[in-house]
Length: 203
Image 1: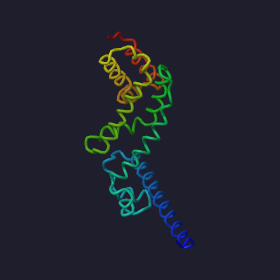
Image 2: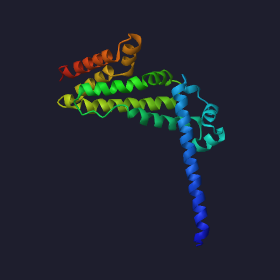
Image 3: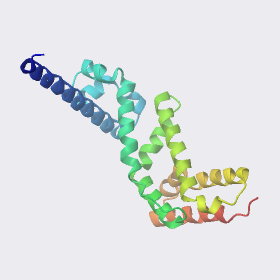
Image 4: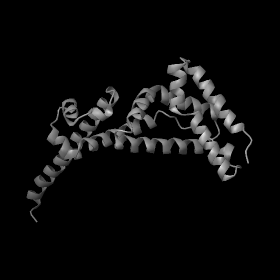
């Protein structure tokens, strides 16, 4: 094997791989920007992504295969970014859990609501929101698990569903936007509702 000839080839391959990765990051970042800025995620086009990223439609297609591929990469970034807004909460700490949830909703509530309005027309968005719902339910099970451990399975599932209703982003919208409650008032109401669910006598 000619080692001298192999090294430049390996360098070129590494350089191409790095360029591909950098372009992918650039496209994903541009798509995230568009998602946050636009009122209609479903209306984002490949041309929009190309303009925002400074790359060509052909480059985007070569990297992600389609507009939905670029959107999927962007949704992955958004989940990671917004997931970090909900601070880790020791199981059983209701006040800290609600405070952490409020921090997340204050940051992503408007974007989340816009996404919910569009999930029926964009299957990719629906799948991502379904994953978000699954993750929220898992969070409820973990954080409030100490209060539910002695319940029978059916009652425990009903209680988790009630907790979901008491902590849903639509309730945040009702209180913060429609009824114009302050953040502290909203946090207090969330806490009261959650405590009510946890204190309810069950089977």
